[in-house]
Image (tube, rainbow, N blue to C red; front, side, top):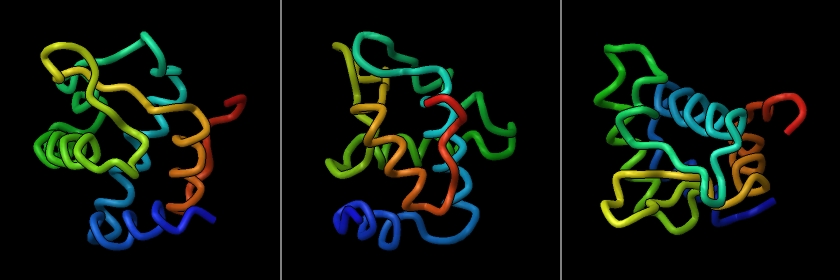
Length: 105
């Protein structure tokens, strides 16, 4: 178990709603294999959640970008692009939050 990752999930995610939101975002990035040179704009990623959760999703993404223990990183000159640090980090994050990584990842 990655203790730093567990600390992140307990301290920063707050409640069940935030946990589900983080799981949804990271799972979708895993499914789309957004690593390496493949990146997505923050606006695209926040559009993957319900409209009423988009502001929360954007805040969550920006918090995860700033946290060195989260599986998300800003990428590119504008830093308004995101990608997973690695597939393994994404899978570990999902498992630590009690979710299941997408099939085949």
